[in-house]
Image (cartoon, rainbow, N blue to C red):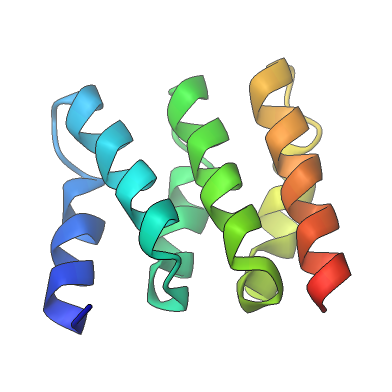
Length: 99
C-alpha cells in the first residue's frame, strides 16, 4: 500500500459521519502500517467509545511498532468504558510481547 492511500484513510478519521470514521479505523487495523500510529493515538481521545476501542485494537495489531502509543493506551486502559479499557490493556500487552 502506498503512503497516499494510507493518508486517505487517516483523513477519513476526521469525517463527520461516525460510520466512515469507524470503517477507516478498521481498514487501518487491517493494513497494520505504522504510519497510522499518530492518527490512531489521536482517535484514542475521541468521545466515541466504539471508535476509541477500535483504535486501541488497531494499535494492538501493530505490536511493538506502536510503542509511541503507550502513554495514550495507558490512559485509555483506565477508561470507564469496558470496551475501551479492555482493548487498550490488550494493546499494551501486545506491544510488550513484541517489544
